[in-house]
Amino acid sequence: MRRAASFLALLLCLYWTGAQGESGGLTGNDITQTEIQSEILGVKSTSDQTNITPDIWAELKELRDMAIEHSVELRKLEQETRLTASENEVKELQRENTVLKARMKTSEDVMEELKMENTDLQSRVTASEDKSKVLEARMNASENEVEELKRQIADQPKVAFSLGLTDSGQVGPFNTDITLKFSKVITNFGQVYSPTTGLFTAPVRGAYYFSFTTLDTRSSVWRRVYLYHNDKRVLFSYNFSASSHESVSNSLVLQLEKGDVVYLVLPASYSVFDNTNDHTTFNGFLLFPL
Image (cartoon, rainbow, N blue to C red; front, side, top):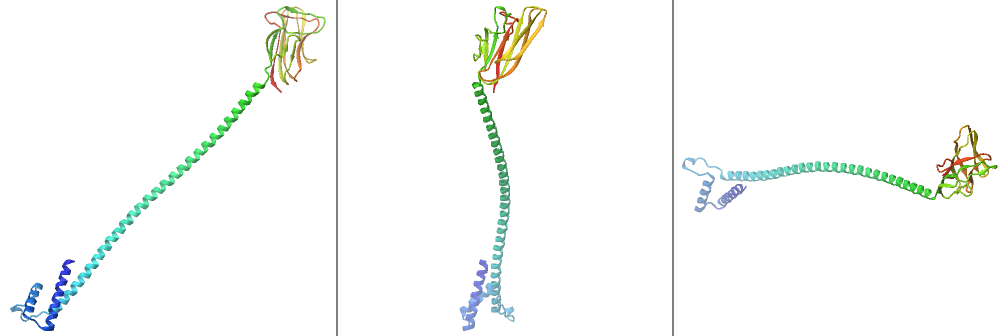
Protein backbone atom coordinates (compact mmCIF):
# COMPACT_ATOMS: atom_id res chain seq x y z
CA MET A 1 0.00 0.00 0.00
CA ARG A 2 2.89 2.43 0.83
CA ARG A 3 4.61 1.61 -2.47
CA ALA A 4 1.46 2.38 -4.41
CA ALA A 5 1.09 5.70 -2.61
CA SER A 6 4.72 6.64 -3.31
CA PHE A 7 4.32 5.66 -6.94
CA LEU A 8 1.17 7.72 -7.20
CA ALA A 9 2.93 10.75 -5.66
CA LEU A 10 5.74 10.42 -8.17
CA LEU A 11 3.26 10.28 -11.01
CA LEU A 12 1.52 13.41 -9.76
CA CYS A 13 4.82 15.24 -9.56
CA LEU A 14 5.61 14.27 -13.13
CA TYR A 15 2.14 15.28 -14.23
CA TRP A 16 2.56 18.65 -12.56
CA THR A 17 5.96 19.17 -14.26
CA GLY A 18 4.48 18.37 -17.63
CA ALA A 19 1.74 20.83 -17.06
CA GLN A 20 4.29 23.54 -16.36
CA GLY A 21 6.10 22.78 -19.63
CA GLU A 22 2.95 23.11 -21.64
CA SER A 23 2.09 26.47 -20.12
CA GLY A 24 5.50 28.31 -20.29
CA GLY A 25 7.99 26.20 -22.06
CA LEU A 26 11.00 24.42 -20.63
CA THR A 27 13.89 26.09 -18.96
CA GLY A 28 17.29 24.64 -18.47
CA ASN A 29 16.38 23.52 -15.03
CA ASP A 30 13.12 22.11 -16.39
CA ILE A 31 15.00 20.06 -18.97
CA THR A 32 17.30 18.71 -16.32
CA GLN A 33 14.34 17.75 -14.12
CA THR A 34 12.62 16.13 -17.09
CA GLU A 35 15.64 14.05 -17.82
CA ILE A 36 15.96 13.00 -14.23
CA GLN A 37 12.30 12.01 -14.17
CA SER A 38 12.73 10.16 -17.46
CA GLU A 39 15.59 8.21 -15.98
CA ILE A 40 13.51 7.34 -12.98
CA LEU A 41 10.74 6.07 -15.22
CA GLY A 42 13.23 4.25 -17.42
CA VAL A 43 12.30 6.34 -20.40
CA LYS A 44 15.44 8.14 -21.72
CA SER A 45 16.08 9.65 -25.18
CA THR A 46 19.21 8.39 -26.91
CA SER A 47 20.80 9.07 -30.19
CA ASP A 48 19.56 5.79 -31.63
CA GLN A 49 15.99 6.55 -30.51
CA THR A 50 15.64 9.92 -32.27
CA ASN A 51 12.83 8.58 -34.45
CA ILE A 52 10.79 7.24 -31.47
CA THR A 53 9.10 9.89 -29.24
CA PRO A 54 6.69 8.34 -26.73
CA ASP A 55 3.74 10.26 -25.49
CA ILE A 56 4.97 10.61 -21.93
CA TRP A 57 1.84 12.32 -20.67
CA ALA A 58 -0.43 9.67 -22.01
CA GLU A 59 1.67 7.03 -20.34
CA LEU A 60 1.70 9.02 -17.10
CA LYS A 61 -2.08 9.25 -17.21
CA GLU A 62 -2.27 5.57 -17.92
CA LEU A 63 0.10 4.86 -15.03
CA ARG A 64 -1.95 7.15 -12.79
CA ASP A 65 -5.12 5.35 -13.78
CA MET A 66 -3.40 2.05 -13.14
CA ALA A 67 -2.22 3.31 -9.74
CA ILE A 68 -5.73 4.46 -8.90
CA GLU A 69 -7.13 1.15 -10.13
CA HIS A 70 -4.55 -0.73 -8.08
CA SER A 71 -5.39 1.41 -5.06
CA VAL A 72 -9.07 0.66 -5.53
CA GLU A 73 -8.33 -3.00 -5.99
CA LEU A 74 -6.13 -2.96 -2.88
CA ARG A 75 -8.92 -1.34 -0.93
CA LYS A 76 -11.39 -3.89 -2.25
CA LEU A 77 -8.91 -6.64 -1.39
CA GLU A 78 -8.53 -5.23 2.12
CA GLN A 79 -12.30 -5.02 2.44
CA GLU A 80 -12.68 -8.55 1.09
CA THR A 81 -9.94 -9.72 3.48
CA ARG A 82 -11.66 -8.02 6.36
CA LEU A 83 -15.03 -9.38 5.22
CA THR A 84 -13.56 -12.87 4.95
CA ALA A 85 -12.03 -12.49 8.42
CA SER A 86 -15.37 -11.23 9.71
CA GLU A 87 -17.17 -14.12 8.04
CA ASN A 88 -14.68 -16.53 9.60
CA GLU A 89 -15.19 -14.88 12.96
CA VAL A 90 -18.95 -15.13 12.48
CA LYS A 91 -18.62 -18.78 11.50
CA GLU A 92 -16.42 -19.38 14.56
CA LEU A 93 -18.94 -17.57 16.73
CA GLN A 94 -21.73 -19.60 15.16
CA ARG A 95 -19.78 -22.80 15.82
CA GLU A 96 -19.15 -21.74 19.42
CA ASN A 97 -22.82 -20.79 19.72
CA THR A 98 -23.79 -24.25 18.41
CA VAL A 99 -21.49 -25.85 20.96
CA LEU A 100 -22.94 -23.65 23.70
CA LYS A 101 -26.48 -24.55 22.59
CA ALA A 102 -25.58 -28.25 22.67
CA ARG A 103 -24.06 -27.88 26.13
CA MET A 104 -27.08 -25.88 27.25
CA LYS A 105 -29.39 -28.57 25.86
CA THR A 106 -27.38 -31.21 27.70
CA SER A 107 -27.58 -29.13 30.89
CA GLU A 108 -31.33 -28.71 30.42
CA ASP A 109 -31.71 -32.48 29.92
CA VAL A 110 -29.68 -33.12 33.06
CA MET A 111 -31.78 -30.54 34.89
CA GLU A 112 -35.00 -32.21 33.74
CA GLU A 113 -33.68 -35.59 34.81
CA LEU A 114 -32.72 -34.16 38.20
CA LYS A 115 -36.17 -32.61 38.49
CA MET A 116 -37.75 -35.98 37.70
CA GLU A 117 -35.53 -37.71 40.24
CA ASN A 118 -36.34 -35.01 42.79
CA THR A 119 -40.05 -35.42 42.10
CA ASP A 120 -39.71 -39.18 42.49
CA LEU A 121 -37.80 -38.74 45.73
CA GLN A 122 -40.42 -36.29 47.00
CA SER A 123 -43.16 -38.78 46.12
CA ARG A 124 -41.32 -41.57 47.91
CA VAL A 125 -40.68 -39.34 50.92
CA THR A 126 -44.35 -38.33 50.95
CA ALA A 127 -45.38 -42.00 50.71
CA SER A 128 -42.99 -42.87 53.53
CA GLU A 129 -44.36 -40.01 55.61
CA ASP A 130 -47.90 -41.22 54.93
CA LYS A 131 -46.93 -44.76 55.95
CA SER A 132 -45.24 -43.38 59.03
CA LYS A 133 -48.38 -41.45 59.89
CA VAL A 134 -50.51 -44.58 59.38
CA LEU A 135 -48.13 -46.64 61.51
CA GLU A 136 -48.05 -43.91 64.13
CA ALA A 137 -51.85 -43.77 64.15
CA ARG A 138 -52.06 -47.56 64.46
CA MET A 139 -49.44 -47.51 67.21
CA ASN A 140 -51.35 -44.81 69.04
CA ALA A 141 -54.55 -46.83 68.64
CA SER A 142 -52.79 -49.95 69.93
CA GLU A 143 -51.37 -48.02 72.85
CA ASN A 144 -54.82 -46.66 73.61
CA GLU A 145 -56.27 -50.17 73.45
CA VAL A 146 -53.56 -51.45 75.76
CA GLU A 147 -54.22 -48.60 78.17
CA GLU A 148 -57.95 -49.32 77.98
CA LEU A 149 -57.34 -53.01 78.66
CA LYS A 150 -55.08 -52.10 81.56
CA ARG A 151 -57.76 -49.79 82.89
CA GLN A 152 -60.41 -52.46 82.48
CA ILE A 153 -58.21 -55.03 84.17
CA ALA A 154 -57.44 -52.57 86.94
CA ASP A 155 -61.13 -51.70 87.31
CA GLN A 156 -62.28 -55.31 87.03
CA PRO A 157 -63.02 -56.85 90.44
CA LYS A 158 -60.58 -59.49 91.59
CA VAL A 159 -62.94 -62.41 92.31
CA ALA A 160 -61.67 -65.94 92.95
CA PHE A 161 -61.84 -68.47 95.80
CA SER A 162 -60.65 -71.99 96.55
CA LEU A 163 -61.82 -73.76 99.74
CA GLY A 164 -61.44 -76.96 101.72
CA LEU A 165 -64.30 -78.25 103.93
CA THR A 166 -62.64 -79.35 107.17
CA ASP A 167 -59.82 -81.27 108.81
CA SER A 168 -62.23 -83.10 111.15
CA GLY A 169 -63.08 -86.10 108.94
CA GLN A 170 -66.70 -87.11 108.25
CA VAL A 171 -69.51 -84.53 108.13
CA GLY A 172 -73.12 -85.95 108.44
CA PRO A 173 -75.42 -87.55 107.94
CA PHE A 174 -78.02 -85.07 109.24
CA ASN A 175 -81.80 -85.21 109.58
CA THR A 176 -82.25 -82.12 107.41
CA ASP A 177 -80.50 -80.46 104.46
CA ILE A 178 -77.56 -78.27 105.55
CA THR A 179 -75.42 -75.66 103.83
CA LEU A 180 -71.82 -76.84 103.71
CA LYS A 181 -69.54 -74.26 105.35
CA PHE A 182 -66.03 -74.59 103.99
CA SER A 183 -63.79 -73.52 106.82
CA LYS A 184 -60.39 -73.91 105.15
CA VAL A 185 -59.81 -70.83 102.98
CA ILE A 186 -57.01 -71.47 100.51
CA THR A 187 -57.67 -68.27 98.48
CA ASN A 188 -60.46 -65.70 98.72
CA PHE A 189 -59.74 -62.72 96.42
CA GLY A 190 -62.21 -59.97 96.97
CA GLN A 191 -63.47 -61.64 100.15
CA VAL A 192 -66.43 -62.97 98.19
CA TYR A 193 -66.91 -66.18 100.20
CA SER A 194 -68.01 -66.27 103.86
CA PRO A 195 -66.81 -69.31 105.86
CA THR A 196 -69.36 -68.36 108.54
CA THR A 197 -72.44 -68.60 106.29
CA GLY A 198 -71.04 -70.83 103.55
CA LEU A 199 -72.28 -68.34 100.89
CA PHE A 200 -70.50 -66.89 97.88
CA THR A 201 -71.84 -63.38 97.11
CA ALA A 202 -71.36 -61.91 93.61
CA PRO A 203 -69.78 -58.40 93.86
CA VAL A 204 -70.70 -57.44 90.23
CA ARG A 205 -72.94 -58.59 87.46
CA GLY A 206 -71.04 -61.12 85.35
CA ALA A 207 -70.30 -64.68 84.28
CA TYR A 208 -68.87 -66.93 87.04
CA TYR A 209 -67.32 -70.38 86.99
CA PHE A 210 -67.89 -72.86 89.87
CA SER A 211 -66.63 -76.39 90.57
CA PHE A 212 -66.74 -78.80 93.53
CA THR A 213 -65.57 -82.25 94.62
CA THR A 214 -66.92 -84.29 97.56
CA LEU A 215 -65.70 -87.57 99.04
CA ASP A 216 -67.58 -90.18 101.14
CA THR A 217 -65.71 -93.01 102.85
CA ARG A 218 -68.79 -95.15 103.53
CA SER A 219 -69.55 -98.16 101.31
CA SER A 220 -72.80 -99.28 99.67
CA VAL A 221 -74.41 -95.84 100.06
CA TRP A 222 -75.68 -93.04 97.82
CA ARG A 223 -73.49 -89.92 97.56
CA ARG A 224 -75.28 -86.69 96.76
CA VAL A 225 -74.68 -82.88 96.81
CA TYR A 226 -76.63 -79.86 95.47
CA LEU A 227 -75.46 -76.48 94.16
CA TYR A 228 -77.85 -73.57 94.70
CA HIS A 229 -78.16 -70.19 93.00
CA ASN A 230 -80.02 -68.02 95.50
CA ASP A 231 -82.95 -70.32 96.48
CA LYS A 232 -82.89 -72.37 93.27
CA ARG A 233 -81.15 -75.71 92.96
CA VAL A 234 -79.20 -75.61 89.67
CA LEU A 235 -76.93 -78.68 89.98
CA PHE A 236 -77.77 -82.13 91.35
CA SER A 237 -74.81 -84.54 91.51
CA TYR A 238 -74.89 -88.06 92.95
CA ASN A 239 -73.65 -91.64 92.52
CA PHE A 240 -73.86 -95.07 94.21
CA SER A 241 -70.95 -97.40 94.94
CA ALA A 242 -70.58 -100.60 96.91
CA SER A 243 -66.99 -99.66 97.76
CA SER A 244 -65.79 -96.90 100.04
CA HIS A 245 -63.91 -93.70 99.27
CA GLU A 246 -65.99 -92.64 96.28
CA SER A 247 -66.11 -88.96 95.16
CA VAL A 248 -68.58 -86.78 93.28
CA SER A 249 -67.39 -83.83 91.11
CA ASN A 250 -69.09 -81.31 88.86
CA SER A 251 -68.77 -77.73 87.48
CA LEU A 252 -70.79 -75.05 85.66
CA VAL A 253 -70.89 -71.38 84.60
CA LEU A 254 -73.59 -69.08 85.98
CA GLN A 255 -74.66 -65.59 85.06
CA LEU A 256 -75.10 -63.70 88.32
CA GLU A 257 -76.39 -60.29 89.24
CA LYS A 258 -74.67 -58.22 91.85
CA GLY A 259 -75.65 -59.61 95.29
CA ASP A 260 -76.62 -63.09 94.05
CA VAL A 261 -75.42 -65.99 96.24
CA VAL A 262 -74.13 -69.47 95.37
CA TYR A 263 -73.60 -72.32 97.88
CA LEU A 264 -73.42 -76.12 98.28
CA VAL A 265 -76.09 -78.12 100.16
CA LEU A 266 -75.68 -81.59 101.73
CA PRO A 267 -79.07 -83.36 101.64
CA ALA A 268 -80.47 -85.11 104.75
CA SER A 269 -79.12 -88.63 105.44
CA TYR A 270 -76.01 -88.01 103.31
CA SER A 271 -72.43 -87.39 104.41
CA VAL A 272 -69.05 -86.19 103.10
CA PHE A 273 -65.50 -86.65 104.28
CA ASP A 274 -62.49 -84.32 104.42
CA ASN A 275 -59.17 -84.03 106.21
CA THR A 276 -55.85 -82.27 105.74
CA ASN A 277 -55.61 -83.74 102.23
CA ASP A 278 -58.60 -81.59 101.06
CA HIS A 279 -60.77 -84.32 99.56
CA THR A 280 -63.88 -82.08 99.60
CA THR A 281 -63.38 -78.67 97.93
CA PHE A 282 -65.36 -75.76 96.50
CA ASN A 283 -63.90 -73.33 93.87
CA GLY A 284 -65.11 -70.37 91.84
CA PHE A 285 -64.00 -67.17 90.04
CA LEU A 286 -65.30 -64.34 87.85
CA LEU A 287 -64.86 -64.96 84.13
CA PHE A 288 -65.81 -61.43 83.03
CA PRO A 289 -68.18 -58.65 84.06
CA LEU A 290 -71.38 -58.07 82.07
